Image (cartoon, rainbow, N blue to C red; front, side, top):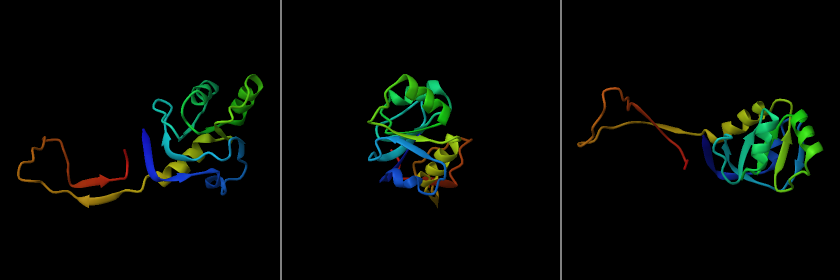
Length: 134
């Protein structure tokens, strides 16, 4: 899953979250959210475990959301990667879910069947979702 948006976001997106600590590069921006299996440049990811945090640090992601205990362990063993923005919060998935909602703006329209359209018997084209995604 990679979800893009036309906008770039920065650290100010976290203004409504209490208890969030930010480390590393606070000037970074991100344009998409990614899962850990398919991280792209300038993306935001979240990690539930220390091993996933290590994977994210070695990726092209610019924002990494992680748990305090995982960040502490990383910080004890490694120098903080100043190219990354670390968002430290006890429940990373909550922040990730809220930010992901910014990328899910879609338009629904009624589908049409053209003159040369071939439709498999199990396909429903009554609603088509159009988004600004790559």
